[in-house]
Length: 342
Ligand code: NAD
Ligand code: UFG
Image (cartoon, rainbow, N blue to C red; front, side, top):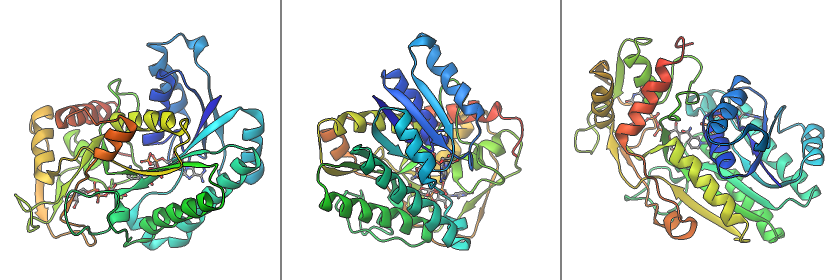
C-alpha cells in the first residue's frame, strides 16, 4: 500500500517523501510543478538510495493537477493508496491578498476533489498541511491547539476553511481519519544539500532571504521592525527544521493506521527565536556574511508566535530534535549549491 503525497516535489513534501521511503513506506507523488521542479524526483531517489537498495524503493511521480478529477481518479485506480498527505497548495500570504481567487480555487478545489476521489476509492486516511497562521494574533503564548482561530488574509482563510470542510466531512462519515498538522515556521534543508527551499524571485520569508544574502545573491536583509514587544524588539517565531517536520508526518501516518478519528496537532519546537537571534546564529555558521538594516514593520506581522507541542509528543510520539545551528548550517549548505537567486 502507498502513501500519496500531493505537492510532494515541493519543500516540505520532498523531505517527507525521503523520510517515508526511509521508513519503508511506498510513495506516490502528484505535483503540477507550479512551484517545484521535476529534478527533485531524482534527488529524492539519490538521497534514499544512499541507505536502501534502489530496487527495494517503491516510488512514483505523476505530473498533474489535483484539481483535475479524471487525472486524480486514474492515479487512484493505478495505485493501491491507503493514506494521503495533502501538501499541494499556494502559500504566499502577500500574493493571496492580490490574487484571492487563485488561492480559493487552488487550495479549496484541490481539497474537495481529493476528498471526492478518496471517497470513491474507499481511501479514508488523510493528513492536511495546515499552518500556525490559523491562530491569527493569539492572546497568549505558547499556542495550544484549542486556542481560538481566525485568519487575517486569503491564504490563512483557505487553511481555516479546509479545516472546517474536514470537520464537516468527518461528521458525515466517521470512518474517515483526519490529522490536521499546524506547522509553525519550517526552515533548514536536508543534510545532503540536494533538497531545500528555493523560492522563485525575491524571497518573502526570512530564512531564504538570509541564505541569499549570505551567498552574495542579495545585498542586505531588511529586518521588519525593532519595536515589537520582544527581548530585542524584532519578531519572534517558532522555527522548526524541515526534517523534523517531515518526521512528524511519518508519525501521523502511523497514527492514522490506529483509526484515530479527527485530530489536530501543532508541529513546532516550543521555542521562540527573534529575527536577530536567527541572523546571529547564521552569521556564526557562514562567517558574518549576513548584513542587515532595520526597516519599518511589515503589515500583518504579529510580534510573537510559538507553539506548545506537547500534544504531538504525547499522541504522535514526535518531538523536534534539530537545533538552530543545524537549521542554519543546512540552509547555507543548500543555498551554496543553488546556481543563482533566480
Ligand atoms: P511548496 O510550494 O514548496 O510545495 C507545494 C507543492 O504543491 C509545489 O511543488 C507545487 O508545485 C504543488 N502544487 C500546488 N498546487 C498544486 C495543484 N493544484 N496540483 C498539484 N500540485 C500542486 O510549499 P511547502 O512549503 O512545501 O508547503 C507545503 C504545504 O504546507 C502547503 O499547503 C503550505 O500552505 C503548507 N504550509 C507551509 C508553510 C511554510 O512556511 N513552508 C507553513 C505552514 C503551512
Ligand atoms: N522578516 C524580516 N525580514 C524579511 C522576512 C521576514 O524581518 O525579509 C521577519 C518577519 O517580520 C517575522 C519573521 O521574520 O518577524 C518571520 O517571517 P517569515 O515571513 O519568515 O514567516 P511568518 O512567520 O511571517 O510566516 C510563515 C509563513 C506563513 C505561515 C507562518 C506560520 O510565511 O505562511 O509562517 O506557519 F502561516
